[in-house]
Length: 114
Length: 111
Figure 1 (tube, each protein chain N blue to C red):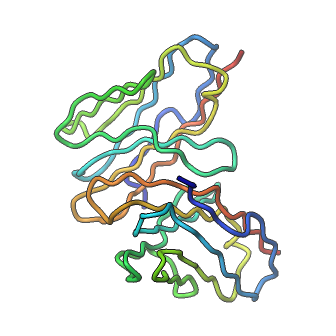
Figure 2 (tube, chains in turn cyan, green):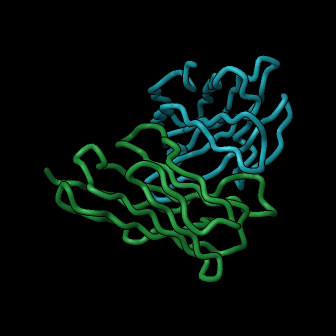
C-alpha cells in the first residue's frame, strides 16, 4: 500500500497570505489528523477528521481550519499567516478514530513564513 | 499542553550499546505509543502498549509501562548508527481522542 502523501513538501509564504496543504491518507483509512511541529512547542495536535466530520480540535486559533473529502483526502488551511506559523505540518492517517489505532504519518509540509 | 515528557532530552551512545529513554505522563491513559522521527521527516510508529500491559517487545525494542508511576521506557538493544533519530512518546487518555506527544529524546548512535 502506498503511504500517506502530503503536498507540497516545501512552501514559502509571506505574512498575511493564506495557504492550503493537502494530505492523502493510506487507502482504506478514514481518519486524518493534522499536527504542527516547531522547535519551541514540539508536536501539537491541530484537528482530526473522520468520515468528513471534524471529530476533535486542538488549541489553535480559528485561522487554522480543515476539511475532509468523501475519498478521505484532507486539506488544512491557514489564513492570515504569521511568522510563528512557520513549522513542519504533519498529517497522519489511521483506519478508525480514537481507541487503539496507530497513526501513519506523512513526510510533512515545511512551511516558511517570511 | 504535552502529556508526555521524555528524559533525557538528548542521548549519545556508541554503536552496539543499549539506549534507554523514559517518558512520564500526567493523566490516566488508554495506551501509550512510541514513534521515531528522522531529521525533518514524518514520524514512524514503533510500538503501542495498552494500559493493562506491562511490557512489550518488537525486534530490538522493548517497552515497559508502569501506570502507578505514570511512566514508560523504551529500550533499544544493540544500537546501530541507523537508529539515530528523535524518539517521541505519545499518550492517548480516556478523555482525549487525540494523541498528545512528548518533547522527544534525540538519540545519536556513533559508529
